[in-house]
Image (cartoon, rainbow, N blue to C red; front, side):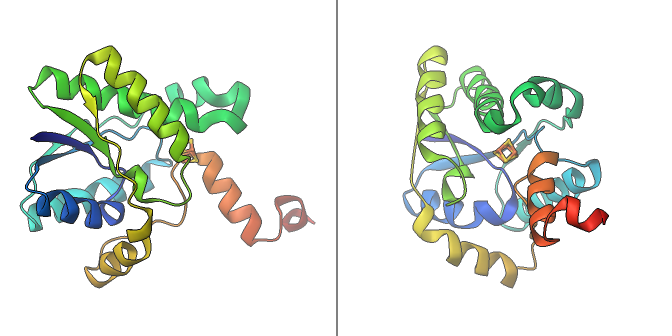
Length: 185
Ligand code: SF4
C-alpha cells in the first residue's frame, strides 16, 4: 500500500513511521501545517522534519505555507472550536495531494498525541476521504506517545512546547505563568 502520511512534527512521527515501516507500508511524509505560529517556530519544526526525514531516508513532500492570516481569519470568531478547522484544513490538503499523486490512502501523525481530539480527527478524516475517494487510515498511536517522545529526545530532535497555533501558545504559557492577568499586575 502507498500511504501519504501527514506529519505534524518530527517528534510525533518517530513511532508512526516505525509502525508503518514494520507493516511494510510504503510511506511518504507530507508537510502542510499552516497552524504553526509564529514563523520562527514554524521554521524550526519544518527544518527539524526535513533533517530527520533525510536521516531516516523517508521521502518527504513539503507544502511550505505559513498561512497565519487565513488560519486566524477562519478561527477568530470561535477560538474554542478552532481544532475542527485546523484538522480539516490539513487533512483536506493531504487527501487532495494523495489522490492527485496515486496514493492508496492517507493518514496523520496527529493520532499519536493524547492531547488531540481523536473522535474529531477520525470523523473529519473519514468524511474527507469519502469526498476525495481515497481511504483515510486511522490508527490510534496514543500508547506509543511517551516512548516516541523519549526516542525523539535521544535523537536530538527539536521538541516543541505547545500544539502549534498562537492560541495554544497563549494557553500553554499563560497557565505556566499563573494566568496572563496575574503576570500583568
Ligand atoms: S490547538 Fe493545535 S490542533 Fe487545535 S487549532 Fe491549535 S494547532 Fe490546531
